[in-house]
Structures are given as C-alpha cells and as structure tokens.
Length: 413
View 1 (cartoon, helix red, strand yellow):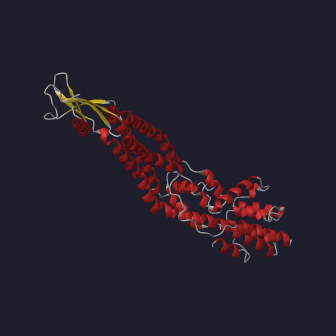
View 2 (spheres, rainbow, N blue to C red):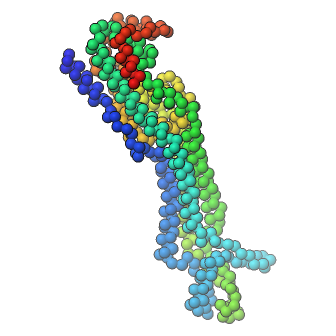
View 3 (cartoon, helix red, strand yellow):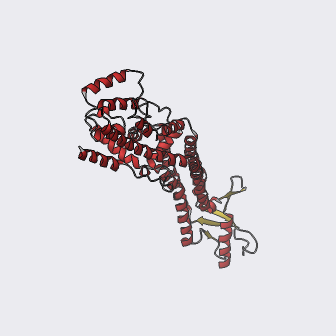
C-alpha cells in the first residue's frame, strides 16, 4: 500500500506546474490575423515606394520631351526640367480656347504611397496604446490565476489523498467530501468574480471593433483615391507642355508647345491596381477577424471547464459575446504558449473521455482523485445511495469536524 501511495504522491507532484510568473515581454497584444493585416496594409505601400524610388534612380529622368530639332542641348535640358516642374497638359477646346490639366499626381505619387502607409498604421498605433493600458494587465492577471488555479487543484488533491489515508472512517470521508463540494470549498472566487466582471465591461471590445472599422474606412478611402484620381490621370501617357517664349525659341515659326511623354505611367498604373486589389482582398479578412468577436471560443472554455472556478459553460453564464471577456479569451488563445496549464488540462480532457467513471468527473480535482486510486470507496453501493439522498436534498448539513476543516482552508488559499 505504501508503494501505491508513494506512486500517487509522485504523480501529483509531477502534475504541478513550476511557479514561474508569466513572461511580461512575451505576451502578444495582436492576434495572428491582426499581424498579417498590419504587415500587408502598412508594408505593401512601403515596398512599392522602395521599388518606385529604385526605378527612378536606375532609369533617370521620369519625362521624355521632343523639342524642335533646332534646339541646343542646353535648351533641350531646360525643356525637360521645365515640363517636369510644371507637369501641365495644354490643349485647345472646341471653341479654340486654351485649357490646362494638371498632372501633378505623377510627381507626388511615390510620396502619397508613404502617406498611405503612415495612415494605415494609425489603427495599429491606437490599438497598441489602448491594449498596453487595458488588455495587458488583464492578460497578466488571468494567465497567472489560471495557472495558479490549476496548481491549487493539484495541491488540493494532494491534501485529499493525505486526509483519505488518515481518516479512520472512509464513509465519513466521502460524506464530508460531498459536503465540501456543496458549499464550494474547492472553487476560487477571485478568478470567477473577475471573469464575471469582465463580461459586463465593453471598453476593450469596442476599441477592438473601432480599430477594425477604422482600418476598413481607410482602405475604402485609399481605393477610392486610387480609382477615381490616379487611374483617370494615369491613362494619359503623353501631354503637351507649354514652353516659355522668348530667347528659348530661336525661330518665330517654332511652336511654343512641346510634346512630352511620361516614362513611369505604366509602372504607376500597375502599382495603383495592385494596391487597390490587395486592399480590397483585405476587407473580407477584416470582417472574418471581427466576426470572431461575435462567438465564444467554446473549445478553449471546455478545456478550462476542468478548473473548479471556470464554470462559464456549465452554469450558462455566457451571454452576448461582444464584451471584454471574449476579447481576453481571444488573446489568451493567441498567448497559449504562456498558459502552462492549458497543455496539462487538454491532456486531462482527452483522458476524461476514455475514463471508466466519466460521468463522475467534473473538474481536475475529480479526475485526479480517481487517477490516484481514490475511486473504490466512491463507487461503493452504500455511498452511492447516500450520494443520491444528498443530491436530492436542497439543504446540506455542515461538514463534520475536523477532517474537512483542513480542506476548507486549503480551498480558500
């Protein structure tokens, strides 16, 4: 018997987690999809800007003009610079009047891509500022409490095992165990109350929705800008430049208007189309990302239902999912590597499905008591009938002295 007891002690001690505080620098305050959206929405314009500037450095002048043949080399250079600086298309209307159309968008387009990248970073900066002050402390506290709750449950089983050995009357032990469960000695009210409080808070949830809505708005405005401004202007590859009359025109018969061609029109067209298409493809990703806030992650909750204090599903405490608790659960899932208890509880949930007394397992305390061999008296016929009588009673007598006063004190730690 001593060998079995020692094996049970080893098994319980191995089940304990090392009491290490959560890594403050390792917590992620962005979901995986949020990180992808940030990299694409901010990184794409910066990538295209670098390609644009690299092409300008390699190709040289962005404009090619065709002045009269009698222009000198310096006059040709002056025409190129003057037409690039003015970048205005001159044309005659049907009634013979001279009209001017500005093509300045070709000149500022690379810089506008930089502006788009900065604007797209605004939702990221907003979320980073608010999440560090609101979400980060919640994650630290809940991760720490979840791991501690798991450890407390294992330590409680250790204490139950010790009490079970020293109790002279096994029937009295199981009656007092039933009484302790009835008055919720095994639960940890601080974590439960905090999670319930977060269900009534909406600050983080509304901020997260605002971030995504702001990103959608900026993407729509960017696509509108590229579509209705750039694509209309970029269809004009050639334009007529007005040359300042005077000494530049050596012959009076030579026209003051010079034909010019923009070299980078095709490149800018491709960049505009690629940017608009990629941004439009981001819209369903953003909507899918926000849709996760409108449903509970019940797979995650089912795992932590093994903790005595985490009974959100069994007690039907889940209401409208648009609240801070759901956002916290989403980020707990993203920081699953920092939740040491999640892996242990996932294993226990899997083993629970194959357990012989599966209907008697509600929490990790139940599972570990069965696992260490404390289920023989629990399944005894006389205790089963007593258990049914206790379950049918609405009021439960107080625990008999003194063997379970230690359990009460252990549960409140």
